[in-house]
Image (cartoon, rainbow, N blue to C red; front, side):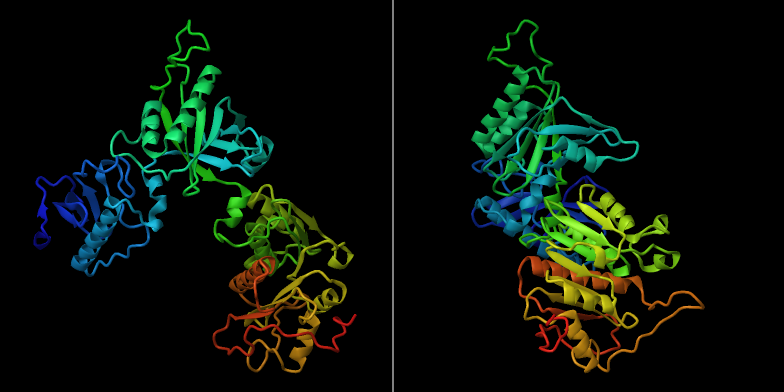
Length: 528
């Protein structure tokens, strides 16, 4: 460190850190004085604090937090090499210098756009808004953790957040939803903001039009004699939302002041920063697959709620099935028995319950407002007209043939071969594609097999106990995951092989790569 121009700070301010003082040399601003905080165990990245910021730079800078702390690497992007502490330190210093150079030049690094929330010490507030243009917003308060829920539908959010022993109350707090053209950045001083005056001063550095909107909304609530107001700010530039709660709004109101008086004493009212935690169904479904089409709004029927269907139902719901006007049908006339528990999504509390109804109840816990209907009849008796996608997770070959003959909606079959040797999925969404019966006939000719040499069925059971095929729950989960990938490819109209195979037994060799076989001309199901 001495060779790089740094020296130890005396006295040392932290027992767990080695703190050194020196300079980061930039091309545009020259040498910038800074402190380097090194973890004595090298278990965490070094920290950089800028001591002196050139006075001609703006008060709000990207990647520069309160008191000069520099954010030079997004969490999880820096791999710490504890075996090369010198090289590790040098690499971090170079990265910090590069980011600081871009900061001083008025640029920013895109992968650090969420850094603001590291400096916004907000109390959590749930954000359950499906349509931002749907009208007035309401607030609920949850009794067990004293958190707010901001919603555009009070009744929907009550159902979503309802729990045993939880009291949900409506709040007499004004709400304002305001958009801003600026990405939020912390100030170097008066941070975090504690009063309305601090908020307005901060916003004047970011977006003066937004500052005026905030002031006007707070004044409107004050003149209406509301006790508090929640202001939610959405940055058009980043898409992120953050909020603040102005408390004790009427505390400085003179007793004889007319409501039309323009000299309003609101600027010293205290504020509480809020972190807006999105919990609307659209966000939950799209969060992990941004830019991809989900199953929202589709009518989907899942036939078979056993070891594959149980896991698949949960995956489908988390990908949008049964929300935003869609519907998920669960069809199974079987009961959950004790021998199912080792590899089923359902647990001990549903023993001797119908699998479809039990799974529907479980999905309601995961996604309280999911539109799911359960049927405890055989699928042949259910009206499946108007269904966008039918998923066959029964693993029953004869039933697969029946579906191929009688159903013309897009069909997705998923099954496990042998004792968990492979999982396969067949998607038939177009007339020229092979159906489930076609694949069965191909297999009888030793064509389109999953593994080289084919498979002999292996069963287990004792006495009068029903026979079953032994394999672990991990195989069922892989089958469900393969089916979900096929369903997402279908809804996005994405090029996808209609017959997919995934080996789960690495001792076997794959016989048929993923492909799209055409239907057999003599197939009795396709010709029916």
